Length: 401
Image 1 (cartoon, rainbow, N blue to C red):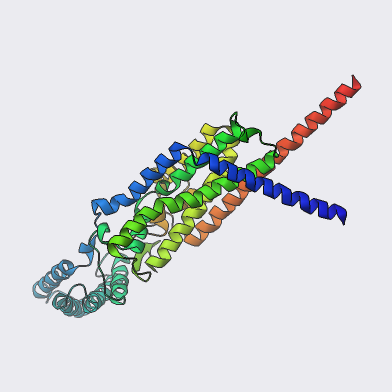
Image 2 (cartoon, one colour; image 1 turned 90 degrees about the horizontal axis):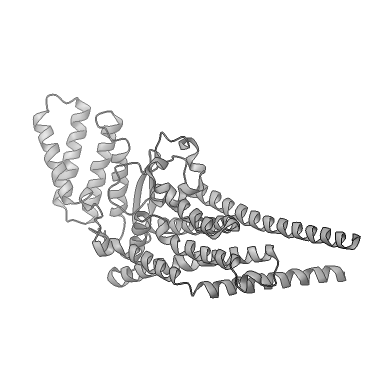
């Protein structure tokens, strides 16, 4: 019984020592000017779409589109009346009625979007009958118009500067590469690795190697959470003060792996944050393991993994890894290809790897993070055991002499 109590006390003391060491690492790293500089740069980049007024492709759903399509359908009915098959002629007449209703309705309004949804459903029927091309494009627009017709106020945004906080974060996180959010955590982890290897008091603290490595990983993970919040907060606050908080039910529609997928702003932002957080934890965990070999290697690993999925060959269908691309952790750093972004242009398939889903990405990133953490602790424990063995052998040799 006494042995068990002592063992529990030792584990508790070891945990307290690791937590205290992690806190010391964080306090020292917060003084690193490179972290502050990267944080300010990333905050500015996330505000850039708002400052520039990045277009939302509103022309894909507005009154001009309705008027343009009305003119096209009117010309088709008058020019090809005798040439159209009866089924196609009936469908074209339905299109004409719906586009006429849309042109007569106020924009934006529920009546306008319902008429446009009905017209898109007719176009989808034409596509399925073989009269139109475009895969699931017409179905996607029908669902988008239907979603817009079913929200309060039917707000439509011309540019990113008009977006409320929630919708802006969905747009910005989908537009910007993940490194914009994760770079401060990469630099902070590099700083932590440097402290472990340099001629500093922290590098020679009276704590075991495995505990030290665990503490470094915990500190790095804390940096992920803190840096993500710090990068996103200014953009969210500015959008909130300018345009309000937004609507979690605002519709998002994408074509993913040739399927029409409907979502909402609330769901999309939760998926974005979940994937970014898990990717950040996996990234810094890998960096801590690679950092055993040197600070430069840790930083290079972090930056390379963030930039790799941005290279055009990575998403090419002819790439050797295309068949198993959905199993690569780096695939899920491309939020625009997995979750999608806030846009009114929904005519194209956004997925590079058809099986890359949010659920699979979360599971893969969590497994990578856990594996890297366990590997780092195991390697440090192995080094500890090897050092003890060498000391024991050295003591035996001394006694023999």
